[in-house]
Length: 183
Image 1 (cartoon, helix red, strand yellow):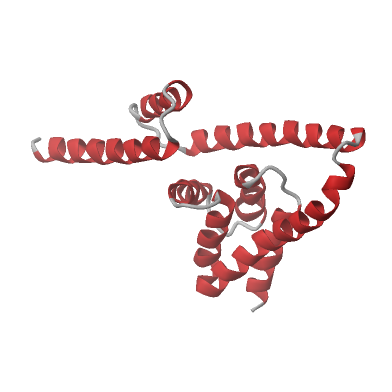
Image 2: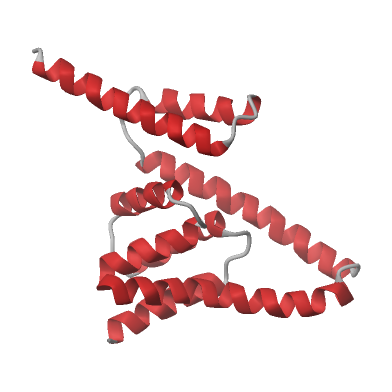
């Protein structure tokens, strides 16, 4: 049971100190789970992130569930989930109660601007780390570039880009397997 409580506490700390949503949590999750605790490998973390982004819901919540399940089964998944959402839920309730009183304050505006800048840096860092640990074949960078172009310039909904990515991955897999069999 001690391991499960450590799992809860680890995700609780991540939830407390992360602003900017699930993607901003990725570097903190990686630092705690992969680097410090060594519960999973960097490759497993990338796999979990890919799967977490493919499922509906927040990437941090999905990641917590998958990591918790891997480490301590279903009770671990539940405790990791609670750990990651309780801080956010509690903070949002408190902020909602007092925000209307202080939202025009210059100090609050400055703090939010600082947080926004930090969140952008966390997202860039997460993108760089995921790209370093991603597939090392010749086609993956092309698919990444194509997905980025579709997202930035066509207005195509991200869900359709994900579905196209799945289809492209399956097509490449089939082509590679067919070409191996014909050799």
